[in-house]
Image 1 (cartoon, rainbow, N blue to C red):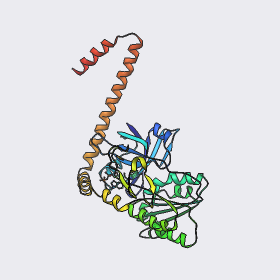
Image 2 (cartoon, rainbow, N blue to C red):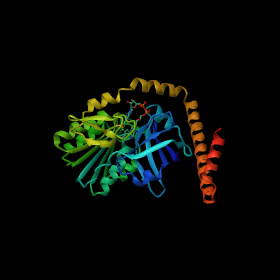
Image 3 (cartoon, protein in one colour):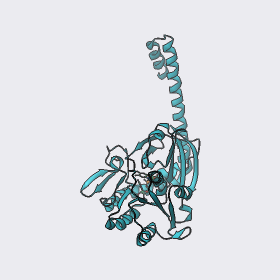
Image 4 (cartoon, rainbow, N blue to C red):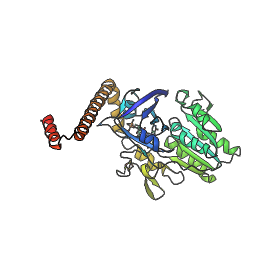
Length: 325
Ligand SMILES: Cc1cc2nc3c(=O)[nH]c(=O)nc-3n(C[C@H](O)[C@H](O)[C@H](O)COP(=O)(O)OP(=O)(O)OC[C@H]3O[C@@H](n4cnc5c(N)ncnc54)[C@H](O)[C@@H]3O)c2cc1C
Ligand code: FES
């Protein structure tokens, strides 16, 4: 069980959670993610580790509600728990001193790109952060973006905040003004990442994209996250999630991500109709699980104590059998 120690809304349908996960907090590197499951029948969803505090044993994630699981997760508050959090998963971002590095991120992609932006800045790069969102309510983590970069540009599609337009407009402007970019990382919706790659590939700028393919196990076993790079199949969970943008087949990625759209829509609709009941059932299930775990710990502790005082194993077996009879 992974306790949520802090939960807050940071944008329209976007929440940030700080979760107790000491082992993951110690091991994670920029660009890595976790796969979590809210309850025993729940689906597994991948979420990038936005930051970690090894001393406090916590990791922070930012979640945009797009379907059933992310919507249910975003109903949780501090004090609630998450059933499973597995990680850190995936290969971490390659951090080098490239020179000038541009981070191009869309909405919740900003949270996903922040750790890499910080690490690139610490490695001596001049970091330019271009954050885009549909509208003002979806602009997130602006202060952190400014702190992680030397230059930050905020754009909204509808012009309600920052400069009007898409992130690619700013990228084009910088290049047209003669700015030399040595490295670009794009994180966000697939059409945005594809558009960035179209701009940078002809200029030979090393460009990485963080692929958001559908994932199940996150260990390279199920094949759910298969992506096509040139003629080669790769698994985003173990070979990525970051890949060289010039090699990625974005059309195949979009087709695969849309494979379950009708089921996803049905499931979200059903969730919205029974939101309260679903949340109550989730909390009841987690409370029962917590009780079960506490009882198991207490039994193990008692057994350890008894064993140090010489109570024979056969007595424990008889007691266990009696309990389950
Ligand atoms: C490595 C990785 C890291 C991620 N990090 C974050 C993160 O930090 N924060 C965050 O909010 N989201 C992140 N995502 C996306 C997140 O996993 C999905 O939004 C989530 O799985 C959707 O689950 P759902 O049940 O709520 O929606 P579903 O009902 O499964 O899907 C609803 C809609 O979201 C689309 N979708 C489904 N899976 C994905 C996916 N993997 N990526 C993008 N769209 C998807 C569907 O096509 C559909 O339109 C990440 C994805 C990957 C692969
Ligand atoms: S999620 Fe199963 S192989 Fe990647």
